[in-house]
Length: 39
Length: 225
Image (cartoon, rainbow over all chains, first blue to last red; front, top):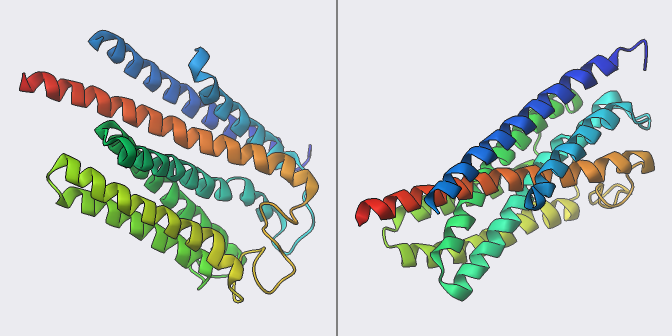
């Protein structure tokens, strides 16, 4: 685990996933805002 | 916030799948560490089947109610399914290149997956050919039910009946279904949450698409007035 340095890959992939998650969430909020506006 | 919990759960489950997917001890097999692909590559297919199941349900609702909103939802879900279908094909080809020595081995799973995608492409083409909303909805819903059954057969049933398959869990070898049978116990703790995470991610993207489409329709209705 320690010498294979695989944890660095885990860290990178986790950041990418979280980035996608935050981005999707911000899209979701933008849509919500528009939905609230037309009501 | 309250109604969005499953969206955040999908990211949490996938985070868990990435972290433990690389840390979990896997059994020794000829494909070595590439076995870990099963958490991510198979997830694409389950995400595809998840959104297509949602599409199928909406098509049935449309046939019952003739409410065009259900037809729209069914269509949007099929559109999202292509994303996961193509990701599944591409990731599968990368894995196959290193496992079987060629990106496209003649395997019932691969052919079934491609035929499934073609059937749904046919669904989209047929939709675009019918101008009348009601008529399009009815024809599309019936085709969607047919396509869903085709998918279940092509991805679920036929590869397991086939003798000459390279994927695990089929015909000749001792197998059983790899998703529900002989997978290593420790791996299952990663595999199932990963599948749930991917499915929910697919539904989240579908949810956003549907809401954007609704906004578009609202604007169109206003312009007509």
